[in-house]
Amino acid sequence: MNRRDRPGAADAAAAAAGRVAGERRVFQNSLSELAGAGEWLRSFAVECGLTHEVTHDLDLALHEVLTNIISYAYRDNRHHEITVVLREHSNRISVVVEDDGVPFNPLTAPPTHPAATLEQSPPGGRGLRLMRSLVDELQYARRDGKNVLTMIVVLDDPFS
Amino acid sequence: MEMHVEKLDGDITRIRLVGRMDHAGATGIDARFMESAASDKFLLVDLSKVSFLASMGIRTLITAAKALRERGGKMILFSPDLMVAKVLKTSGTDMLIPVYYDLGLARNALQPSPAPKR
Image (tube, rainbow over all chains, first blue to last red; front, top):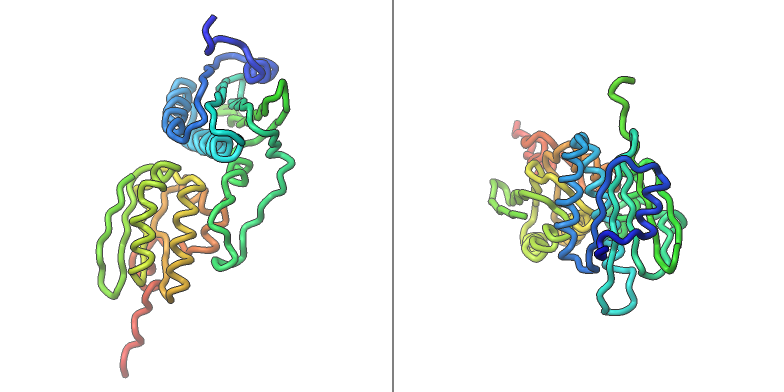
């Protein structure tokens, strides 16, 4: 069994959500990994026949989560692995991201509010707010020393 | 991502961005964009060919708009596609930097035409 096949918390979370079809990939904690992660997700979206809007929202949500982990989750300069599992199950797409960075629950992180004026507006700090707005459900768990974040998008029923 | 700079009439500079304004895209144009914000007066940022806008790209836009405002200049965003417009709205950026879809209105917002003489 190679490293990519080894089951982990991300797989367990995806399986618990009821797997039908999915893919798993491991990325390094380097911002240069973002482009590959995005390409992989978009290719998965094509295979699942997702709409342009759902693809965009998942692409951006994953981009923001990975950017946040790579930029802020580690207190050392060592290499770390970030596992991402994409699953399509019934009318849902789930994206599970597992990292061994410092504990961080984005569901309990204080929400940032948009500034009223340009002068009051900080340049950054919008990534997590964006991510929260793009997905329908968010779940977080700290398991075996790892953050496991599950983002779920519920697909529209074309027959409803 | 690509960044094309073009001088229009009336001290207006049009910056046309093309591609994904993700972390790498925004980082790649950030220095040139800020150079323009530090030297030009009115910036019309054409987003019609931008397919993806991440928070790093919003950071570039906000930082440039603030720098321009401090110098008495102004920046507007022009013609974002549906997905980019959604991100601008969700992030509240459209409340901080005006968004226009009509070039005439956009230019007038940057530099109002003088009232006709009687």
